[in-house]
Amino acid sequence: MFKLFKEKYPDSTISYNTYRDIFNAEFSLRFGLPRSDTCKLCDKYYIETIAAEDQNKIRCIEKLAEAHHKKAEKAYSKLSDDTKSALGSSHIVALCVDLQQVIYTPNLTHTDVFYQRQYSNYNFAIHNLGQNTIDMYTWHETVAKRGAAEIASCILRHITSTYAILKAGDVRKLIIWSDRCVGQNNNWTMIALIYHLIKMKYFSEANQKFLVSGHSFLPCDRDFSLIERKKKTVRIYTTEDVHEMIKSAKPSNPFRVHQMLQIDFKNFDVLIKNLNKNTCKITEGRWLQITADDMQVLRLRMNHSTGEPWHCHSLRKKSKCQQKYARDILRPYELPVLRKKPIAISAEKKKDLLVMAVYLPNQDAEFYRAICS
Image 1: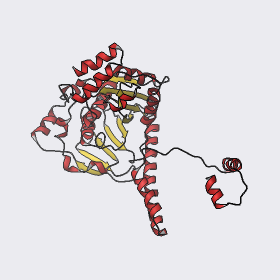
Image 2: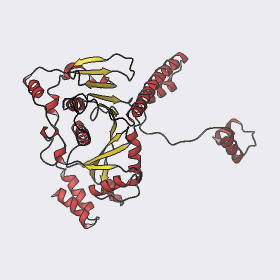
Image 3: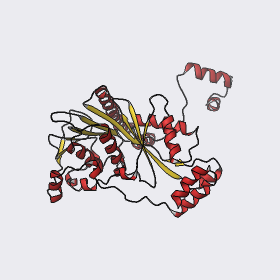
Image 4: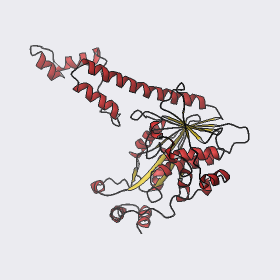
């Protein structure tokens, strides 16, 4: 900036130090690092604004950008409202859920590791907004993948192990906040899950709400940042080290870590096939709801405004399967297991893991030898 200043005012006798002092003292400007995980729509509007030569076109783009930001702000406002409503309440369960980036092991430091295939560990967070408790559900790549069934299975285990079935006349509302990742959160597997939880009488009303894509900074992200910070200071060789790292990432109000076993991951196809999937395009909704009073209806809103009327879609699918499900309520343990055998890893990855095992303590190396055998 000082060089540009001198080019524009070549006769100026101001020194660099003077320029810097004035800039720091007289202007409320700061330099920051380039942002990551930005909103693609905001980036599009920014590029179009730079390229636009007509002021009318610029104003039109600015109006679109302003409307987009208002939607994001409205969603954050509703997240805050749900958090306040759930505080101290036994009738409202507000959860924020998210899957952390893959944690790779072993985290050796020599340069060859950058060219070798490491072992994948997964961590799914369920942050109870009302109680401010954080449960982490972990597994690794031979146990399960990271799709919709895995996410729904973690939530199902959390709900069934934390809450009791409602008694006659009792009410309890579930609110699940997440980003709009179609492969994990915004899909029919999640609809089948909340339908199942209503059917099993864990809740009288279940809501699924999504933040605006690109503006989905959730409380779980703050939890993950603590883990990422801890990861820089410790050696993690195996999945057990991953568990210990997560447990120690937050000394005050520690994360509660639960290891997911293969039997914990359920196949939700038996539930999905009993629902009428042709009723609507659920990826268009920002707020989805099912109630015990009329659980054959999926209510959908395009935004988080309570003033918008519900778009109602029938979930009823007339078939023998639906009639059977209506008679026999499936318990969690009755859902079929997602996979009966461990997931095989490629021969190339086995070879790399065995090479890395040479540099590990004997008990940790044995973990990888067992996986590769």
